[in-house]
Amino acid sequence: MNLANITFQSIRFLLLPFALLYAAAIWLRNQLYDKKVFSSASFNIPIICVGNLSVGGTGKSPMIEYLIRLLKEEYQLAILSRGYKRKTKGYALANENTGALEIGDEPMQFHSKFPEVAVAVGENRVEAIPQLLHDRPDTQVILLDDGFQHRAIKPGFSILLTDVNNLYTKDFYLPTGDLRDEVRSSRRADIIIATKCKPGFTEDHKKKITKDIRPLPHQQLFFSTIEYGVPQHILNTGQTSPLHKNLEVLLVTGIANIEPLKRYILENTYTYERMSFGDHHIFSIDDLNEIKKRFDKINAPHKIIITTEKDAVRLMKFHTELADVPLFVLPIQHKILFDEEIKFKQAVSSFIQNFYKEENNT
Image (cartoon, rainbow, N blue to C red; front, side, top):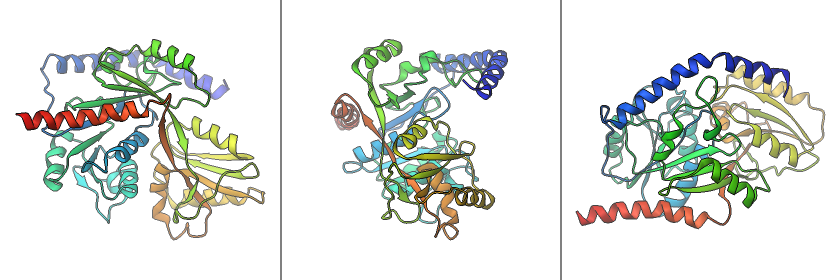
């Protein structure tokens, strides 16, 4: 552990009193919901919630995309997100003129990759869902992005993600730790997925994590790893640049958890340099110029710039300036381990089918 990490951890420890106050506030809030003092709204449509108990990247966006690919051929889907760090307020439905500043980078990523799927944002999701259904009355399933801790809505099915390297069962409350909700809130999940398993993750690892998480009888526990695709040019997806051991990379990121990506780049290229920005960073033209300068200083015959899909949607506004820049986007997706992908798909599909079956019988 380097000096910077030691200092950071020391500061977090000193913030323990604030973490205890935060924990008390979260406990009280959950008690008020559990005792029905605060009510949770239900809607007559299948709602699948994807979320986590901790801040930081656990793979929520790739899981939303996984569900889209799983369900879009059978159902009319809609995604509802808060639209974190957007420049607008209230409800908004993405259209052909929408940008990341209007709806946020993750919703914009969904809209760009799956234009046939309705993508809406709204801080007050209880009010946003009726508006979404009014705008898209053919919607059959709603995917609620990052909604696990927002108890104002009661989803029909909840998928809880936890980074296998930072399990919520071993974490503590903000700001000392990363927890933003109680560990016992995990009981509300129908499926728990331990994400970001490293290559070589074995049955023994699976047993250990299962023992740590201790899923309840009604819960199914799955394990997933990140599967990377071939880097695609930010402006032309048909232009690709496979990674190889003679390649030097400038890695540009503004995401919460970069460790799996760093490891993958290092394992599959000669070397890399890194420019890190804050999570959900809104890039400026000065940032882009600094990226270009840093790239020009790399003295190598084979070199490219790589960024994430989330960062790409915030860089696309510079499409004119990027025309001659070798900036490539590295796509990612979840892969369910231990040959349990069919089991996972059946669990999700069964929820939707049973919902409509019960509705038809009433």
